[in-house]
Length: 128
Image 1: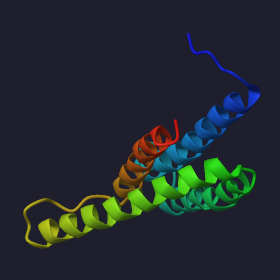
Image 2: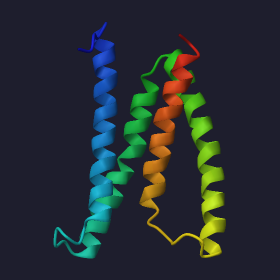
Image 3: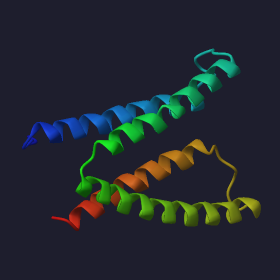
Image 4: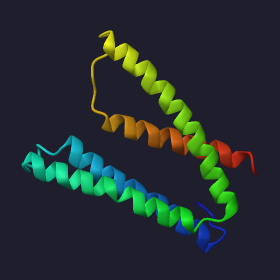
C-alpha cells in the first residue's frame, strides 16, 4: 500500500492523473476519431481544443509549485527537449531514406511525455 505523507502528495498525484486523462482523451480522439463515426472536422476540433487545454493547465500548475518542484521540472524538461530533438532528427533521417515508414506525430507527443516522466523521476533522485 502506498503511504502518503501529506495532502500535498495526493494533490500532486491527482494533478498528474488529470493531465494524463486530458492528453489520453485528446490522443484517443485524434487516433480513433473514425470509429466513433464523428465527422473529421469535429474530431479535429475536439482534439485541438483538448490539446490547447494543456497550456493554461500547465501554467496554473507550474505557478503554484514551490522552488524545488520547479527546479525538478526544469531539469526534466531540459533532458526531454534534448532527447526528443535527437530522436526526431534520427527519425526524420530514417523516414526520408524510407528505412522506417511515416507515422502519426501524436506518437511523438506520447514519447515526449514518457521521456519527461522518466526524466522527472531521475531528477527527483538527485535531491533525495
